[in-house]
Image (cartoon, rainbow, N blue to C red; front, side, top):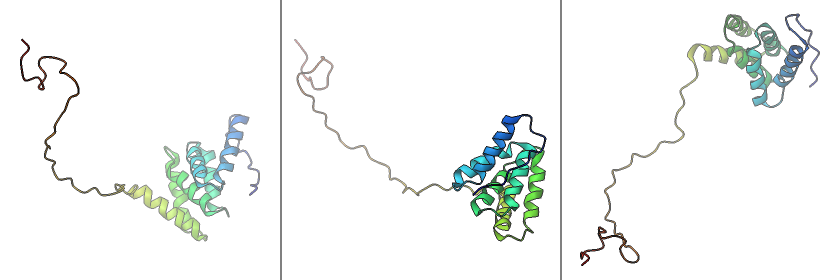
Length: 156
């Protein structure tokens, strides 16, 4: 999907910052959810510019994966942008698009409650205590020293 060109906000310091934001924006709209989430996380560290791109992706007419990745990026915001991100997610609860509503509701729930605790993959049976078995060691060849338990007669 070809995205319309984004107008620089004027807050970018140089051409490299503009190029990085354009690259992250393209990755945010990627078909692969993993790449989109990584781009959203990186945009969450970009302050106002990242917030603008994430809000645009959340409220625009984009795919479900893009909206979920944008909501992930908004809930990953830190510092002074966190309050603005929460306001954007709260505003998304009243949006007309159902996917946007669901993504915002889930993100706000995760912000307030935190992630669910991880459960272990499988439950192990409690092991019964093991009794040491009787082991027999048979050596090969003659004993190496006189203190070996195989050598019962002293050397004379």
